[in-house]
Image 1 (cartoon, rainbow, N blue to C red):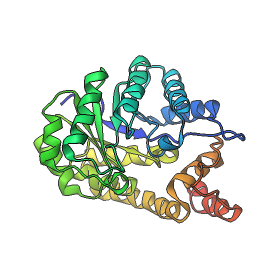
Image 2 (image 1 turned 60 degrees about the vertical axis):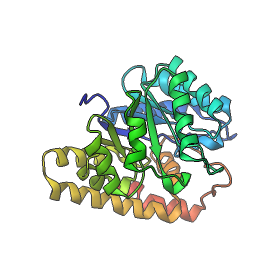
Image 3 (image 1 turned 60 degrees about the horizontal axis):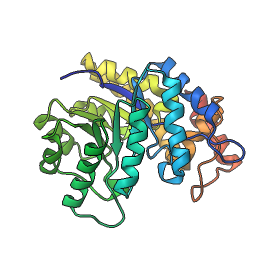
Image 4 (image 1 turned 90 degrees about the horizontal axis):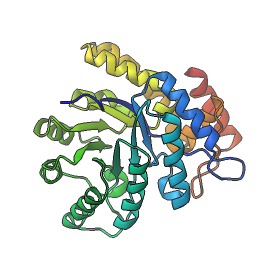
Length: 291
């Protein structure tokens, strides 16, 4: 397969300023920070980016800021997921105009759509937007997990580039990759990155990459060199940090770690919690100072 898209992609958070507006300068700095780490690209306006907390105008601003900052130096995936097909297409057309490499979308949720309705949603998007699609398989949030047979109905069409696989069902991940070796599989759970690689993932998209991308890059390098024991040791280091992150909330905690590293991200939007001074100190002692 073409290896163009293999590698590591931070799922960017959306920084806010003191007024609660999108902090463009911080977003630019975060992109540059991770480009210096050697990431392959960015996953923009996804779950970590609080996509469903943003207005359409804000979301388009995020797409634009990352595209202008990356300047052709990285692969860019725009998450355009929305319950409304028309809204997803609108975001997709923005991404197309800005030069993104692919779009991605969570399945339409809440209304318990049938598989055929979900399938039509995706095909309507790729028919209206001239970019390949990365399906976002995230049953923990969407309530929808695709089987290998269902995925075959997408992967039979070359417009479907791959899948962001945020699940611990590694049997299904392996079935996806074995049946469709020319499609990209991106591991989603940071704490299971090595496991995903071992079952066929081509890389990963994750929240923690924003502040420790070098650890994930090294895990993948060691895996490709068949140095599994060494890779596992670094995965254990990652998981100690993830364990601490779980104590305060992954999204809130990720933004605070990045802020402590000098790139102000602000708080996550309500109803997410505002971290207490004690929680921020916990993050400093258990995550930031260990990076």
